[in-house]
Length: 109
Image (cartoon, rainbow, N blue to C red; front, side, top):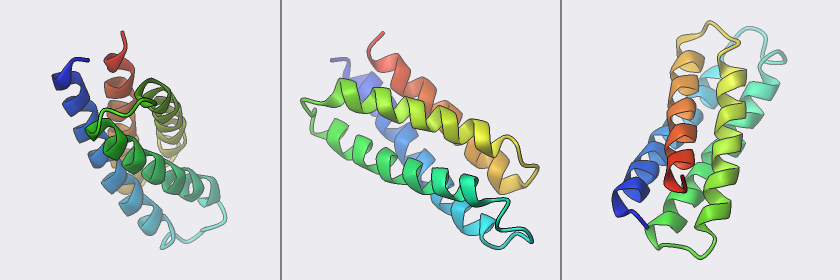
């Protein structure tokens, strides 16, 4: 494994985790929280998976290939959802998720 690719992915995952947690919390303060339900749910799931992926990549998990594939998928889905909203927190989160998906996909190319 290319340790630099792992490190890039780990770093992108942690950035994504932070962005997703911040976005989920900020979404709860928006006027129409019901409209934000899918965004909040994806943010929470993405943060959990991003954290798990970063931790398991750090120990060179046997399941790294499967983890980064799933992480890239959920990050892409979360980015797509967040890009739908004009809120700064959603746009920042979408960019972090998009970057994480790219970093995850780069590991096994």
